[in-house]
Image 1 (cartoon, one colour):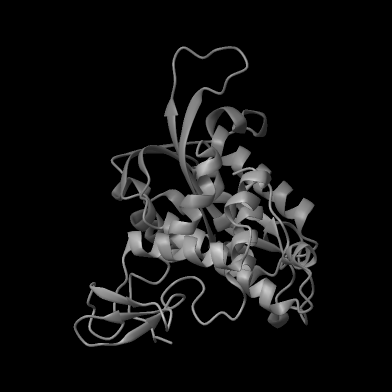
Image 2 (tube, rainbow, N blue to C red; image 1 turned 135 degrees about the horizontal axis):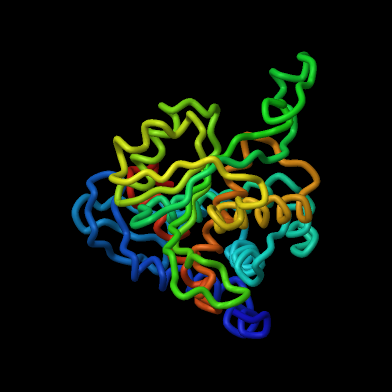
Length: 311
């Protein structure tokens, strides 16, 4: 959505509120008390009332805005900024654009939006042929590790391990300048270690429909053949990594560049949120102006999968 279109469609607080209600009505409201799906809209109270148990639910309840005191238009502006470009915005920059005095509510809002993106992507399972490898992202040293000497290399406290998987279909014939594979969905998950049990668990959950997987010869991947019909493992020279696992390493490179360019420091406990935003936009790279509306659906559906405390 262009900036001009956004301003014309969401010029004030009331228009944003009505737009949000329109999407919530389309997605459906679930009563947190009895699970009922039929509700009245109490216009004077601006609340839903369950037809079965008469429980009342606010417009924000059960959505990404649950218990938020920030205006609807703040949320809409943040959603527009996050979806209008391939890059990202820091919470500090969004706070500046909004002119809001306090930083923490804006930071919390932006991370809730990233969590909504991650929850939406959890619904998709990787299928077909996939590439798989790990990446090491620079993050702040955790508090519990600050007293220890800083290690070097991949085991450094300044590095967070991330498992990266991408659907990758081989295309023939290959045109000059084109990659030998066509990419589908991408997933990135922060992991504590590279033990085979950790890798196996994630592959079973995130790529259960995969039929073939390409990896390097790491011992972390020795059991993948038990979960995926065909496992192609090989020693990959550094100068050939872009040919064997092209999309995984391009995604890792682009994600690192985005984090460095947008954020000064990333705490390891919040790295997954930033990766969820990157993957969400990568997986919807052809949505164009429709991306704002898709994120709005994800925000409205945020807590529909479980019971929540209404209010």
